[in-house]
Length: 306
View (cartoon, rainbow, N blue to C red):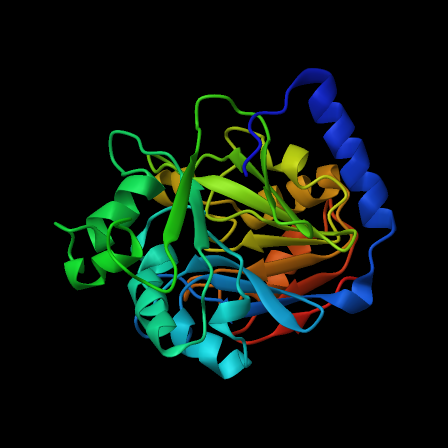
């Protein structure tokens, strides 16, 4: 089901194919929806990070599942039985905590097919996505009453099928999901946290999600090349120093990456109290290098490729 690392000539081929596909984007078929535009704060009035990618009027892919996103999933009108894959950029609480709610909610739906969950492999600080799902839903897990979704010997309408993205090579890997969706991932630097960025290709359109990161690895521009939409996180202001800057991009870095990747549209999300209300300043920094459209995300916003 899954293809692995693309390097050298193969990588160039895939990127050129993505570029050609992007130029032929069937924009009427694809839509991005923001389920959560916030971070881990409790008093920002936003759900934590999560995104939904629609194809032909059906919710097909979910990127991250931060707290509150399962409620907004219901508000969006999406159906869990339509979702083919969940991609986690990393396992911080504000990106993953609603996965149990999402899985439990499936009991009350008509879902009958396996659900693919993708995310980074582990490191000294974080578990792999395989371990994460096992620790949540396994027979010895926190929610062991839901172990029928992961234990093959137990009956359930569907199973959770996990795959961890390697972090060793700073190259693109890709993961075909059925005949209509090709996912790509690349490791990104989020301080000591195991993290990856994701790209969704469908109907000739490309939407890339940075997740939380700074630009130490300089990998995102490779993954995001010629994307129709690039979602980037503005968790810190331009003046950020120390730990905050070690974990997150400043607005000027956002602009530099978007320009190098030649993306058609930039959506700014993961907005925190230290950046909300400072959109004008952030936009000024981004526009120093990126000349395309810049849109600031709120919960349940929808964005179409241009």
